[in-house]
Length: 139
Image 1 (cartoon, rainbow, N blue to C red):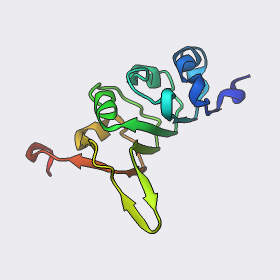
Image 2: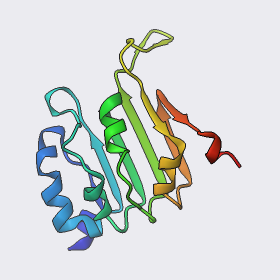
Image 3: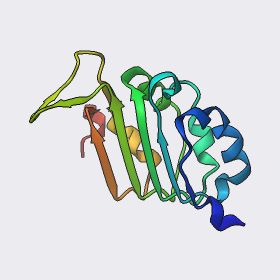
């Protein structure tokens, strides 16, 4: 039943099976939330090609990336025309009382041109993400 796979939220310990799931059911996924932590942290295990199988994907949440892992992930060129909402939460980030803190480790930095992978993107939510625009990308 395709509707069973419209919303996919794997547990962090199940991320090693994500490629198999997307290969088999990706064409039905409309919402994908990948939130990892600790020993199940996202890294080289997630490839953009895997997401390309999700031809109906409208909303994507990526959480648990460390800065360099996210940068590596975003080096690939791929296109998700159906994606309308993208949320990226990078580690490390934590709140202490009413103050927000960066622990001083490498922060994610992405070229603004990467957003062209999502031509129909309407909503971008991110924390500790810096988009870099080169002079060639300016209007």
